[in-house]
Image: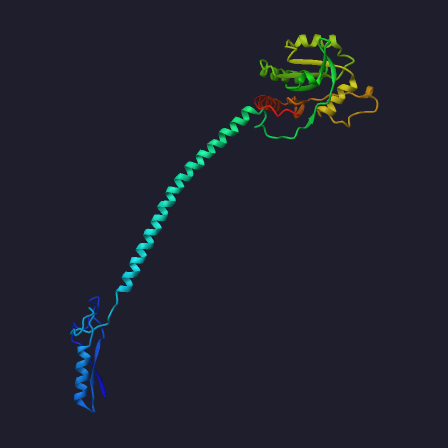
Length: 301
Protein backbone atom coordinates (compact mmCIF):
# COMPACT_ATOMS: atom_id res chain seq x y z
CA UNK A 1 0.00 0.00 0.00
CA UNK A 2 1.30 3.42 -0.97
CA UNK A 3 0.31 6.62 0.77
CA UNK A 4 0.43 9.89 -1.11
CA UNK A 5 -0.14 13.36 0.36
CA UNK A 6 -2.05 15.83 -1.66
CA UNK A 7 -2.31 19.51 -0.95
CA UNK A 8 -5.64 20.79 0.39
CA UNK A 9 -7.47 23.32 -1.75
CA UNK A 10 -6.84 26.92 -0.82
CA UNK A 11 -9.15 28.09 1.96
CA UNK A 12 -10.05 24.61 3.11
CA UNK A 13 -7.19 24.20 5.59
CA UNK A 14 -8.30 26.79 8.08
CA UNK A 15 -8.17 25.88 11.76
CA UNK A 16 -10.81 26.39 14.50
CA UNK A 17 -9.88 30.09 14.84
CA UNK A 18 -10.24 30.83 11.19
CA UNK A 19 -6.51 31.01 10.57
CA UNK A 20 -5.06 29.27 7.54
CA UNK A 21 -2.61 26.45 8.01
CA UNK A 22 0.66 27.12 6.22
CA UNK A 23 1.29 23.46 5.33
CA UNK A 24 -1.73 21.19 5.46
CA UNK A 25 -1.68 17.95 3.53
CA UNK A 26 -4.25 15.21 3.30
CA UNK A 27 -3.04 11.65 2.93
CA UNK A 28 -4.25 9.80 -0.19
CA UNK A 29 -4.24 6.05 0.31
CA UNK A 30 -3.63 3.74 -2.70
CA UNK A 31 -3.64 -0.03 -2.29
CA UNK A 32 -1.32 -1.31 -4.94
CA UNK A 33 -2.50 -4.88 -4.34
CA UNK A 34 -6.27 -4.33 -4.36
CA UNK A 35 -7.24 -0.98 -5.92
CA UNK A 36 -10.91 -1.44 -5.02
CA UNK A 37 -10.05 -1.97 -1.38
CA UNK A 38 -7.97 1.19 -1.47
CA UNK A 39 -10.89 3.19 -2.88
CA UNK A 40 -13.20 1.87 -0.16
CA UNK A 41 -10.67 2.82 2.55
CA UNK A 42 -10.31 6.29 1.07
CA UNK A 43 -14.08 6.77 1.06
CA UNK A 44 -14.40 5.60 4.65
CA UNK A 45 -11.66 7.95 5.72
CA UNK A 46 -13.35 10.93 4.08
CA UNK A 47 -16.74 10.03 5.53
CA UNK A 48 -15.26 9.62 9.00
CA UNK A 49 -13.32 12.93 9.00
CA UNK A 50 -14.19 15.50 11.71
CA UNK A 51 -13.96 19.20 10.99
CA UNK A 52 -13.18 22.03 13.46
CA UNK A 53 -16.88 22.32 14.45
CA UNK A 54 -17.06 18.72 15.66
CA UNK A 55 -19.38 17.63 12.73
CA UNK A 56 -18.63 14.57 10.69
CA UNK A 57 -18.32 14.48 6.94
CA UNK A 58 -17.27 18.10 6.51
CA UNK A 59 -15.31 19.16 3.47
CA UNK A 60 -12.82 20.94 5.76
CA UNK A 61 -11.21 18.41 8.07
CA UNK A 62 -9.12 19.98 10.90
CA UNK A 63 -7.77 19.44 14.42
CA UNK A 64 -10.63 18.83 16.93
CA UNK A 65 -10.56 21.23 19.94
CA UNK A 66 -12.43 20.41 23.16
CA UNK A 67 -13.42 23.77 24.78
CA UNK A 68 -15.28 22.19 27.70
CA UNK A 69 -12.11 22.00 29.83
CA UNK A 70 -11.31 25.67 29.24
CA UNK A 71 -14.87 26.72 30.10
CA UNK A 72 -14.71 24.69 33.32
CA UNK A 73 -11.45 26.40 34.30
CA UNK A 74 -12.99 29.83 33.64
CA UNK A 75 -15.99 28.96 35.80
CA UNK A 76 -13.71 27.77 38.60
CA UNK A 77 -11.60 30.95 38.39
CA UNK A 78 -14.73 33.11 38.63
CA UNK A 79 -15.92 31.14 41.63
CA UNK A 80 -12.56 31.56 43.42
CA UNK A 81 -12.57 35.29 42.69
CA UNK A 82 -16.06 35.64 44.12
CA UNK A 83 -15.04 33.74 47.24
CA UNK A 84 -12.01 35.97 47.73
CA UNK A 85 -14.12 39.11 47.32
CA UNK A 86 -16.59 37.78 49.89
CA UNK A 87 -13.79 37.04 52.36
CA UNK A 88 -12.31 40.50 51.80
CA UNK A 89 -15.68 42.17 52.38
CA UNK A 90 -16.18 40.12 55.54
CA UNK A 91 -12.73 41.12 56.80
CA UNK A 92 -13.55 44.79 56.22
CA UNK A 93 -16.77 44.47 58.20
CA UNK A 94 -15.01 42.60 61.00
CA UNK A 95 -12.20 45.15 61.09
CA UNK A 96 -14.71 47.98 61.55
CA UNK A 97 -16.39 46.15 64.39
CA UNK A 98 -13.00 45.31 65.83
CA UNK A 99 -12.02 48.98 65.90
CA UNK A 100 -15.32 49.84 67.56
CA UNK A 101 -14.78 47.21 70.24
CA UNK A 102 -11.17 48.26 70.70
CA UNK A 103 -12.16 51.90 71.12
CA UNK A 104 -14.90 50.97 73.57
CA UNK A 105 -12.70 48.87 75.83
CA UNK A 106 -9.82 51.37 75.50
CA UNK A 107 -12.17 54.08 76.74
CA UNK A 108 -13.19 51.91 79.70
CA UNK A 109 -9.56 51.33 80.63
CA UNK A 110 -8.85 55.07 80.36
CA UNK A 111 -11.79 55.92 82.62
CA UNK A 112 -10.71 53.28 85.13
CA UNK A 113 -7.16 54.67 85.20
CA UNK A 114 -8.46 58.23 85.61
CA UNK A 115 -10.64 57.11 88.53
CA UNK A 116 -7.63 55.49 90.21
CA UNK A 117 -5.58 58.68 89.85
CA UNK A 118 -8.36 60.65 91.52
CA UNK A 119 -9.08 58.19 94.32
CA UNK A 120 -5.53 57.09 95.15
CA UNK A 121 -3.04 59.91 95.80
CA UNK A 122 0.24 59.39 93.99
CA UNK A 123 -1.09 56.59 91.76
CA UNK A 124 0.03 58.38 88.57
CA UNK A 125 3.34 59.59 90.01
CA UNK A 126 6.31 57.74 88.48
CA UNK A 127 8.01 55.49 90.98
CA UNK A 128 11.37 57.20 91.44
CA UNK A 129 13.83 55.97 94.03
CA UNK A 130 14.38 58.80 96.55
CA UNK A 131 17.84 60.26 96.96
CA UNK A 132 17.57 59.89 100.72
CA UNK A 133 15.07 60.35 103.55
CA UNK A 134 14.84 62.77 106.46
CA UNK A 135 15.93 61.42 109.86
CA UNK A 136 14.25 62.66 113.03
CA UNK A 137 15.44 66.06 114.22
CA UNK A 138 14.53 68.80 116.67
CA UNK A 139 15.63 72.42 116.26
CA UNK A 140 14.30 75.83 117.31
CA UNK A 141 12.88 78.40 114.93
CA UNK A 142 13.22 82.20 114.84
CA UNK A 143 10.50 82.46 117.49
CA UNK A 144 12.17 79.97 119.84
CA UNK A 145 9.56 77.28 119.11
CA UNK A 146 10.60 73.64 118.66
CA UNK A 147 10.57 72.32 115.10
CA UNK A 148 10.69 68.59 114.21
CA UNK A 149 10.43 66.50 111.05
CA UNK A 150 6.79 65.79 111.94
CA UNK A 151 5.91 69.43 111.30
CA UNK A 152 6.75 68.87 107.63
CA UNK A 153 5.03 65.55 107.00
CA UNK A 154 2.38 65.97 104.32
CA UNK A 155 4.20 69.05 102.98
CA UNK A 156 6.54 69.63 100.08
CA UNK A 157 9.51 71.68 101.19
CA UNK A 158 12.92 72.95 100.12
CA UNK A 159 15.78 73.05 102.57
CA UNK A 160 19.08 74.94 102.59
CA UNK A 161 21.99 75.81 104.90
CA UNK A 162 23.27 79.38 105.28
CA UNK A 163 24.40 81.83 107.99
CA UNK A 164 23.23 85.34 108.62
CA UNK A 165 26.64 87.03 108.51
CA UNK A 166 27.69 85.41 105.21
CA UNK A 167 28.97 87.87 102.61
CA UNK A 168 29.64 85.31 99.88
CA UNK A 169 27.16 82.87 98.36
CA UNK A 170 24.40 83.14 100.99
CA UNK A 171 22.84 86.44 99.82
CA UNK A 172 22.71 85.13 96.24
CA UNK A 173 21.21 81.83 97.38
CA UNK A 174 18.48 83.47 99.43
CA UNK A 175 17.70 85.86 96.62
CA UNK A 176 17.02 82.79 94.42
CA UNK A 177 15.12 81.17 97.29
CA UNK A 178 12.84 84.21 97.37
CA UNK A 179 11.71 83.36 93.82
CA UNK A 180 10.74 79.90 95.10
CA UNK A 181 8.90 81.48 98.05
CA UNK A 182 6.97 83.80 95.75
CA UNK A 183 6.06 80.93 93.40
CA UNK A 184 4.32 79.12 96.29
CA UNK A 185 3.36 82.06 98.50
CA UNK A 186 -0.32 81.05 98.50
CA UNK A 187 0.26 77.29 98.63
CA UNK A 188 -0.47 75.99 102.18
CA UNK A 189 1.21 72.63 101.51
CA UNK A 190 4.59 74.09 100.60
CA UNK A 191 7.34 75.34 102.95
CA UNK A 192 10.97 76.42 103.01
CA UNK A 193 13.30 75.32 105.81
CA UNK A 194 16.55 77.29 106.22
CA UNK A 195 19.14 75.94 108.68
CA UNK A 196 22.00 77.97 110.00
CA UNK A 197 25.44 76.44 109.60
CA UNK A 198 26.85 78.86 112.22
CA UNK A 199 24.76 78.20 115.34
CA UNK A 200 27.29 79.92 117.59
CA UNK A 201 26.46 83.22 115.90
CA UNK A 202 22.91 82.57 114.72
CA UNK A 203 20.97 82.40 117.96
CA UNK A 204 17.18 82.60 118.10
CA UNK A 205 17.21 86.43 118.38
CA UNK A 206 19.66 86.68 115.48
CA UNK A 207 17.42 84.51 113.30
CA UNK A 208 14.43 86.60 114.29
CA UNK A 209 16.23 89.76 113.20
CA UNK A 210 17.24 88.18 109.91
CA UNK A 211 13.76 86.81 109.16
CA UNK A 212 12.23 90.22 109.81
CA UNK A 213 14.66 91.77 107.35
CA UNK A 214 13.55 89.25 104.72
CA UNK A 215 9.92 90.33 105.17
CA UNK A 216 8.49 86.84 104.64
CA UNK A 217 5.78 84.80 106.31
CA UNK A 218 7.76 82.67 108.77
CA UNK A 219 4.96 80.11 108.84
CA UNK A 220 5.94 79.33 105.25
CA UNK A 221 9.65 80.10 105.35
CA UNK A 222 11.09 78.77 108.59
CA UNK A 223 14.58 79.56 109.96
CA UNK A 224 16.10 77.16 112.51
CA UNK A 225 19.15 76.81 114.73
CA UNK A 226 20.38 74.08 117.07
CA UNK A 227 23.36 71.97 117.96
CA UNK A 228 26.11 72.11 115.39
CA UNK A 229 26.58 68.33 115.13
CA UNK A 230 22.82 67.79 114.70
CA UNK A 231 22.60 70.46 112.01
CA UNK A 232 25.56 69.06 110.09
CA UNK A 233 24.28 65.48 110.36
CA UNK A 234 20.99 66.61 108.84
CA UNK A 235 22.84 68.27 105.95
CA UNK A 236 25.11 65.34 105.20
CA UNK A 237 23.05 62.29 106.08
CA UNK A 238 19.39 63.28 105.67
CA UNK A 239 19.53 65.82 102.83
CA UNK A 240 22.84 64.69 101.26
CA UNK A 241 23.77 68.25 100.26
CA UNK A 242 27.32 67.84 101.58
CA UNK A 243 29.78 64.97 101.52
CA UNK A 244 29.67 62.96 104.79
CA UNK A 245 33.43 62.54 104.43
CA UNK A 246 33.72 66.25 105.30
CA UNK A 247 33.39 65.40 108.96
CA UNK A 248 36.50 65.99 111.06
CA UNK A 249 36.95 64.26 114.39
CA UNK A 250 36.55 67.55 116.25
CA UNK A 251 33.20 69.21 115.50
CA UNK A 252 34.66 72.56 116.53
CA UNK A 253 37.00 72.39 113.54
CA UNK A 254 34.16 71.62 111.15
CA UNK A 255 32.40 74.21 109.05
CA UNK A 256 29.79 73.48 106.42
CA UNK A 257 29.23 75.94 103.60
CA UNK A 258 27.26 74.67 100.59
CA UNK A 259 25.11 76.13 97.83
CA UNK A 260 23.05 72.95 97.34
CA UNK A 261 19.37 72.62 98.20
CA UNK A 262 17.21 69.54 98.71
CA UNK A 263 13.60 69.05 97.61
CA UNK A 264 11.63 66.87 100.06
CA UNK A 265 8.23 65.29 99.36
CA UNK A 266 5.21 64.74 101.59
CA UNK A 267 6.63 61.50 102.98
CA UNK A 268 9.95 63.02 104.02
CA UNK A 269 11.84 61.55 101.06
CA UNK A 270 14.49 63.65 99.35
CA UNK A 271 13.51 63.80 95.69
CA UNK A 272 16.34 65.84 94.22
CA UNK A 273 19.35 68.00 95.09
CA UNK A 274 20.02 71.13 93.04
CA UNK A 275 22.49 73.99 92.87
CA UNK A 276 20.81 77.01 94.46
CA UNK A 277 23.09 79.41 92.58
CA UNK A 278 21.90 78.28 89.14
CA UNK A 279 18.59 79.88 88.05
CA UNK A 280 17.91 77.07 85.55
CA UNK A 281 18.07 74.44 88.29
CA UNK A 282 15.93 76.60 90.57
CA UNK A 283 13.26 76.68 87.84
CA UNK A 284 13.44 72.90 87.55
CA UNK A 285 12.99 72.59 91.29
CA UNK A 286 9.88 74.78 91.16
CA UNK A 287 8.37 72.57 88.46
CA UNK A 288 9.24 69.42 90.40
CA UNK A 289 7.62 70.85 93.52
CA UNK A 290 4.46 71.72 91.59
CA UNK A 291 4.32 68.21 90.21
CA UNK A 292 4.60 66.76 93.73
CA UNK A 293 1.77 69.01 94.90
CA UNK A 294 -0.42 67.91 91.99
CA UNK A 295 0.51 64.25 92.28
CA UNK A 296 1.55 63.46 95.84
CA UNK A 297 3.25 60.10 96.44
CA UNK A 298 1.51 57.21 98.13
CA UNK A 299 1.61 57.53 101.88
CA UNK A 300 3.99 55.23 103.65
CA UNK A 301 2.36 52.63 105.84
